[in-house]
Length: 539
Image (tube, rainbow, N blue to C red; front, side):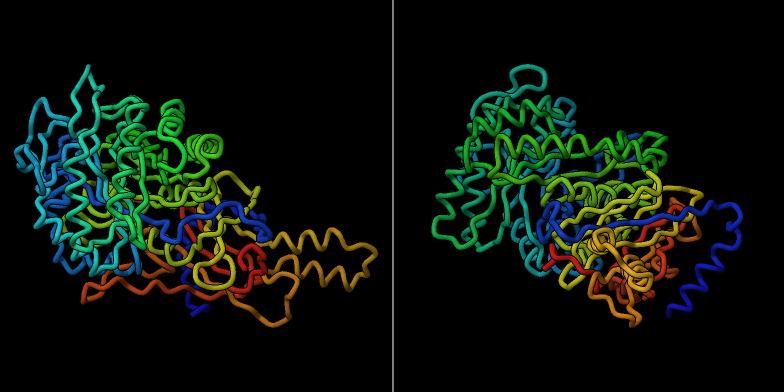
């Protein structure tokens, strides 16, 4: 298998070998201390409320993927979720603050979403019937999904001016809905309050002090309804774009222990219609800008709300349904995996991708339900990258981005390496910081012992290295036929396609001698698993 893969790489590289630069360098991972920790179910995906007639840029890419009408019996859908062996699903999106729950003493008419010129986001209020909620929960149970549900935070309020809404939140409809959910035994991992109402909002916004007051009310409701329950859901807010002053005020107003999670949204690539989307995705300087938001949120949580943690509650890269022929292609995985890596370094516990299905940025195709490339990127992360984040350094080039975690479910370390360069072939030596420190501290050594230490320095097994040949696992991701906008991802030279029965294909690594350099081809991505890496932080 290793010989075959080596031959594949050689043959594939012959046409371009003279056009490429070759850069040698080192990647150093420090396994002695934990940088951050994610949740076990870090990867998350959303199911949105948008109806089929939600359109942007003369395109209507949502089809029938709404919470209201998604075909839950489609075999590809269930299998795609089950492959994660517990995928976190967030039910929410822009229209969630217009959703009425057809249960209890609801006094308002409960009709489907309709186009409405003066409505929020151009739509009327919509209705979630309990028959549909039953269907959704049967599906969630069958697929072992972990559910976050976004509640309507505008119910009972009134518009004061422009996009500002005031008045107390009317909790009666949400409370009846939660009571129904509990009575049916439906398992909700977390309730999220509102969608994009923070700061100046998107379409609508609510002042932070009012929002905080309403969260105190919601916390009391949750505590009362789940009294005596062994699994009380978390309370998440505000599910909006980061605004430092607003977020601080929310924490101060709501007070200690009310909010469990501060969720924020990220669309750092701009509008889906932007013709420069691909260049932004491949620009390390542009990708680095997201660190400002991650870092600031980490700071205010530590200072004003250390009882909370951070989630990216929604992120699709490009807003307004994503970019056609970009967000659903291989090139988007450079952005997606870089976001997962960066977010985890800044103590983000969960990262929810907009969407599981729907729009141009769905992990699954909106009409065929066939996985897009980012689906496989998310699945590989979920299977390989554990929750303990490690420090990794490489000075080879800003176009070579690397992240390291303790491996998931087993010993060792997994390294994610992303090559944004279109012409540089990086050949990297993987190094363990333990060995580098050991070699630097040893004094008065003989030539033989120096040679032995040098040998250990370039091994991933640490100070317990033996002379036996050890293997690492490699997962190299490239686009089909070298076309960056291909909707087919290639793993180690093999296109990833559903089996004849609609099952997710096996994601098999190639095994390579652990002491050999790592080769990362231009515009490619690789997960490298080192099963014998000595990392005290991973014990």
